[in-house]
Image 1 (tube, helix red, strand yellow):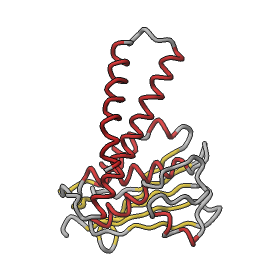
Image 2 (cartoon, one colour):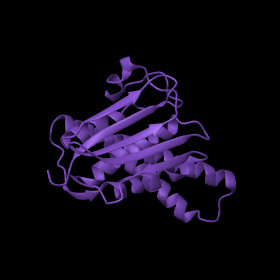
Image 3 (tube, helix red, strand yellow):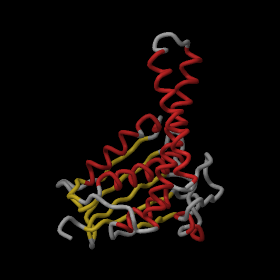
Length: 216
């Protein structure tokens, strides 16, 4: 109920920011434009957090419908990476994908959000000039997707806890809500897939998930 109630003032806030941006176009100095951009970005992030909380509640209650269709996993992954392009900076993203399109039966919008969350998480834990690897392959039970970073790594006792809501492990470079990985776990499991992490301290992390093949 609280999350639903947050939507009304947030809608008013974003509408006001949109009006201000359009009516003040070309009239603001550099500092004022930066303040407006920061406020807009923060409002958008708050909206994403509210939507994630609502979706987590629906998934936990088994009430979030999935719009299933055959999807090209590489297409979804590249779309997710494109939205995060401004965050990469000097980091490099390498792709390992099959020659033929790997299709799976899934909700494209939901799986794209999973990929966005995993990539965003990897970017935050990768050094400024570091490397990320996104791999898509055919596994024994369907599609296999992994995102690897060269960050500080995660001790084995936290490998399950990190997928819990609001989990904070003390290794984050920036504070997080602890909702992204919880959403990923519920979303992948709702598709009949599995999700996990392979990591040791000092050796980076690989977050992976599976999805049933298109024939399933």
